[in-house]
Amino acid sequence: MKIHYSNEVQSALNDHKPILALESTIIAQGMPYPQNLEFAQQAESICRDQGAVPATIAIINGEVCVGLEKDQIELIARDPSVKKISRRELGLVLFEKWHGATTVSATMHIARSSGIRVFATGGIGGVHWSAEETFDISEDLLALGSIPMVVVSAGAKAILDIGRTLEYLETLGVAVVGYKTSEFPAFYSRHSGFHGIHQVDSAKHIARMYRNHTGCGLHSALLVANPVSEKDEIPARDIEDIIAAACTSAQEKNISGKKLTPYLLAEIVRATGGRSLETNRALALNNVGLGAKISREVHK
Ligand code: PSU
Ligand code: MN
Image (cartoon, rainbow, N blue to C red; front, side, top):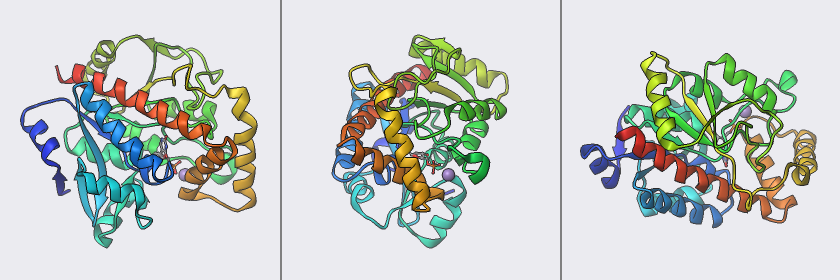
């Protein structure tokens, strides 16, 4: 795979500086313009403040880009022709010379090929409600099962069946730890009701655990579940009905496949009058902050 590195990322690679991978589907399909652009810029500056070099990953004109220039981030944030690209579609988007925003699975693949070991997202994809009928299970899970990186996420998106997502993560051999919690967080909310995951309290310990994980010859990811802060969360009881209504509305409109997650997120933003967008931004930035700290520890 031919990769184009931004100047900033190229010099970080040369100088062996800590780098944090960031995805672009959260920008192009996960949030509306202009809040998405503001988010993408904030994510990069938080990362730099924490002492890591941000590598936002996307496909521009069929070229794999690790680290984006200002105008490229703007393109991803506002050009409606930017497609949502998961790992299996990489060859296709390169061949067609399209613009592509990379999901967790595609971002992990590219980051790993660049030698980047730590990645922060908002919430990973997983097993959707009614997956027993629709078979809608995100390729993110397979990438987590097969790429040995540290991935920081606010649990799994609350639009998913979290219990089944956790079971599937086990099947795939993904190591799951909670940052300062033993309860798997539910994206917008700190609590999911799924207790008993291993708690880790510092970036240093996560980096050590990751070294042990890969040292055992394991090729799966270490998923760090990082709950949104109390002040930014939407308690589960306030959002449950809204999520259920969004899922019903998607069913009625026959929205499925890769359109489903962006549709549900947008519906929830509409139904909460923008509150869920604020929470999404806060939780993703929180993950970037922790991801940058872990990346520094991993690079020591
Ligand atoms: N986190 C967010 N918003 C998002 C995503 C993550 O806060 O939009 C994206 C990620 O790119 C993830 C994708 O890979 O949602 C999952 O899509 P799907 O359910 O179609 O696999
Ligand atoms: Mn899907």
